Length: 253
Image (tube, rainbow, N blue to C red; front, side):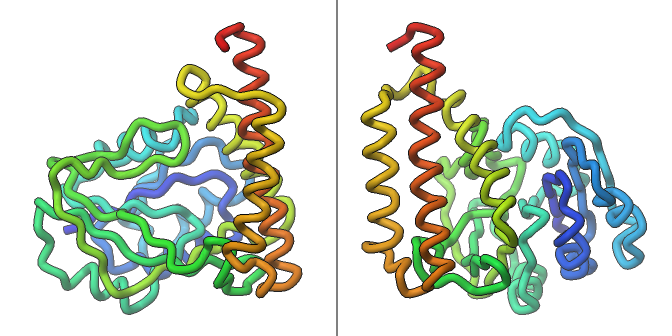
């Protein structure tokens, strides 16, 4: 049996669609970190999973730590880690439920990333894959504040054939909110690990745009590709600018 563990904050736009595809799973655990919309009402009233939905309110302590807390709350050993804007395809759902799972394996799958309901096949968003299904007695997520991942240890990796539709960016405000959150977490996480400066921030920003728009062919997606490339550039710039600010404040160059 598999427990689905998801982190949630103000996910009302996509949560119903996500839960619709999880009705055949034994348990869904939703860790909320302060939603002010009706996300929790959707979770609690969702008829086909209502009995199995567990809602826990948690203070945000980093993505890795929260995913591990959710796994500890689960009744099953197998954990499927999802976000509340990630929708399983029917094929992937059936594949997960019908595959004989090996505890010495970590399972992953491919992601189809959307912006404004348009599938993006450039900017580094295409053929993206992540490990998301694991046995909690064998491994866990890293404790990273951001860019957390399942610790691979000596476990084998296997990628399933189905895919997840990822609706992370639906409007410009989604870019701005995620940029603010991720850049701050990056700076905090790397304040004692990486060096930074204004010039380094500028160089990272310029290269991120060039990589996304030219090398990763963002120009093929027209305006969406340009917007995503500008976003990637801003994320790179502000990650290192915030890191520079923290290190300057703490005098830890």
